[in-house]
Amino acid sequence: MMTKKKHLASGLALAGVSALVLTGCAGSGDTGSGDDTGASEGGADRAIELAVFNGWDEGIAASHLWQQILIDQGYEVELTYADVAPVYAGLAGGDFDLVLDTWLPITHADYMEQYGDDLEDLGAWNDEASLTIAVNEDAPIDSLEELAANADEFGGQIVGIEPGSGLMRITGDEVVPGYGLEDMTLIESSTPAMLAELQSATDAGENIVVTLWRPHWAYNAFPIKDLEDPQGLLGDAEGIHSVAATSFADDFPEVHQWVSDFEMPSDLLYSLEDAMFNQYDGDDYAPIVEQWISDNQEYVDGLTS
Image 1 (spheres, one colour):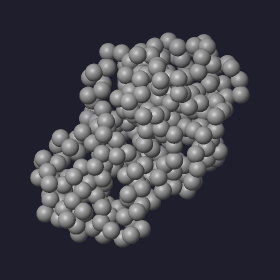
Image 2 (cartoon, rainbow, N blue to C red; image 1 turned 90 degrees about the vertical axis):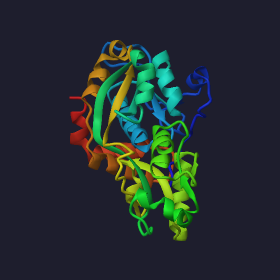
Image 3 (spheres, rainbow, N blue to C red; image 1 turned 135 degrees about the horizontal axis):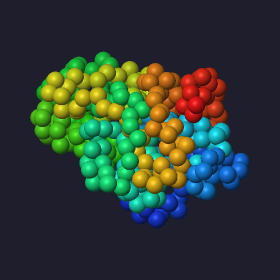
Image 4 (cartoon, rainbow, N blue to C red; image 1 turned 30 degrees about the horizontal axis):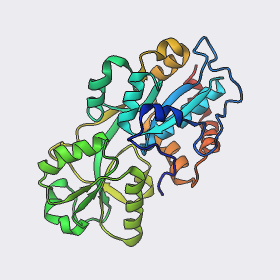
């Protein structure tokens, strides 16, 4: 089941990105705040602009969680979906306040190097993230070292995600040459398209190779396994960081502190992703997130205490 969301094209100018802000939960057309307080304690008298990477479900889940938490604390929060590159440019240029899905020290390092002087790294909220190449569980291989010799078993292709993502860059620049996969086609698509291909292959009982990452709800939804990476070309486990505009601390000091202290273990993240993207088939995540918060109230209360 793929994530159903409204997405902004990667080629949009930043002004257009700002103008096309998706307020509240996607598809609802409602900020959900119920007031115009902007901030509960001495923050800027405006909404918090929270950027969300298209197709990165851990960031979508964390962003909707924080949107609801902040609404409950009296803030107004606007979510904007965009591809990776426009998000970092928007943060550096003041169009966005915050993004919750920066992978470091590898995947998004190029963007942090390019825009780092205008950004603030608020630290990792999960330190178990990893890039993967996955296949169906009953595939005839277990390692990337076996893939080139068995390319025909997978139609000679690796189904990828968004072309601007760090995962695609590392797969194309490191994994493909490192394991001699130049004769295979690395397909640039999107995360929803990749998941749709994974669903189709699973339904048909066919072999498939996809670019993926952990944590991701697909590992609960599909019978898949990671190919071993004996050369370590996909990198070690990374941290998922919150990154803010340099103005965020002054504009929203209370929220800045909360997000800086934010931690979410993988088991809780998996359960939230599963509730939003696997058990639920819709666009309005607000009721799903509210129920998850109710089921995990002690944890959620601790995020703002």
